[in-house]
Amino acid sequence: GQSLEQPSEVTAVEGAIVQINCTYQTSGFYGLSWYQQHDGGAPTFLSYNGLDGLEETGRFSSFLSRSDSYGYLLLQELQMKDSASYFCAVRSSTGRRALTFGSGTRLQVQP
Amino acid sequence: ETGVTQTPRHLVMGMTNKKSLKCEQHLGHNAMYWYKQSAKKPLELMFVYSLEERVENNSVPSRFSPECPNSSHLFLHLHTLQPEDSALYLCASSQVLERGEQYFGPGTRLTVT
Image (cartoon, rainbow over all chains, first blue to last red; front, side):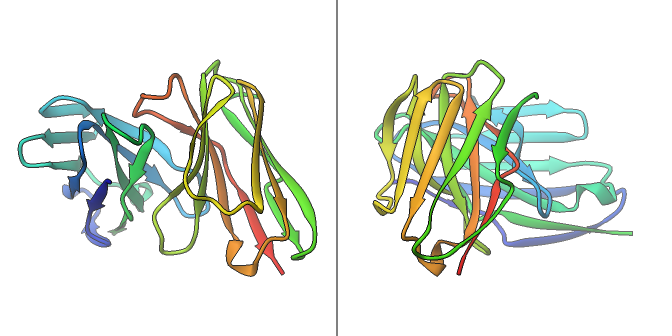
């Protein structure tokens, strides 16, 4: 099966940089996704890494190391509106084909 | 309407009621999903449909019954639910089954009394 681990909570100040880590275990890895969910809202897709390295999308970047079964989401120039939960999700290339989500990291941005 | 829509947004039902949740995607996607999100728990995948065919049933109790009449619509029929079934039910779609990029609807907040 698949399992993912990420910190439950992270706190940072406005303007800072924060990194949210995700380690995973899966039988046959296909890719790692990141989602953002504000309180009361639906998850929204942020990024996807299928290959090792860094993917950058504006203030957000996502990194993957398949050899270490590890990835992270990097948020730069934090804004108050970035306060939300962030989920990593893995897709396996064998067996179950849909995404398995981590428990989520609650990011609190303080002024 | 754009994206993924869900109705109703809120639902309160008794344990003996029968109700249905509706999801519609306007993105031309071929795969649709039902998730359950409870407080302080990760998203739990319930059902997966690809081209109207159910491809995954994640050990969900039979009191939840999905239906996918076409690639744009997905229903979740509910009957004789339990209070522990109270949760946010999210529908999502993706272009194809294997994509790591899914688009979620706003969810239905279900309360079982």
